[in-house]
Structures are given as C-alpha cells and as structure tokens.
Length: 168
Image (cartoon, rainbow, N blue to C red):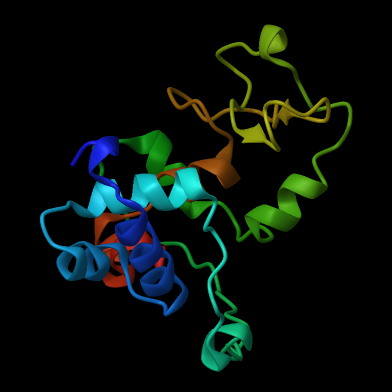
C-alpha cells in the first residue's frame, strides 16, 4: 500500500490497534489490503514506539541459579600421529585458562610483531584494547601454542560431542 492509501480513519484505527498491543501482522489483517511491513513503516513514521506494558512484561524474570561447574583436567591418551599434540596432553594439569591468562608474566607477553615460530600465538583480551597481548610462552614443536593453550584449542572430538552445540 502506498502512503496515499493511509486515510485519516485508517491511521486512527492503526493507532488504536497498536495501543491495544496487537502485532503488526494482526493489525495488517484487521485493516485489510495492507502488509505487515507497511504497518511497521507507518508506526515508525508516526513515532508510535511506546506500547501499553502488560504486567508480566514489566517484571524481570528471576534467573535460574546454576551451580558452579568445576572441571578437573586429566591427561588423555592421544593417537601417535601427532607427537607434539600428545605431549600437550601429557603435561601436568595447569590452572583454568581464564585464571592462567591473567597471570601470564609481563616479560612473556608479546605483541603481534614480536611473535615467531617458537612463541605461543594465543591471543589474550580484546584486540581493540591497549591491554591486548599474546601469551608468548614456549610453543610446542610444530604447533602455534604452548602446552596449556594447545589443550584448550585442540580438544578431542569425543569431548566436543558430549558437550553438544555451544560448548555446554
């Protein structure tokens, strides 16, 4: 429907239906011979963004309390195909990655230009932040990460399948 098709009566009816809380699709069906998008456009042009709030939508929903999930890292047998990766899993358990990233020694932290084949390329922080750095630890042979970050990056497929989509 063109802008010329919006008569004063139809605009008044649109306003009443919008204030009553009907969706754009419902309003389009009620008015007839008009699309949902035309209704949305007209509502926007009229500045009818506010609606009467229903009591259920004004109160925030209480969140479910979830117990803290503690994981114990254990070494796993790995196929003989990649000895560097196998070494990464045989290294003694290290702290949680979040905690580990917060304690990377200042002398070990590198910027992009300082990285080379023997340093860990694991990024830490927000790249747009001035505090951003790379781990810089000793990388495992033929891998871009240190033992700790290799375990984080290269998880066995069986573990990924158990967690399901989204890592949960």
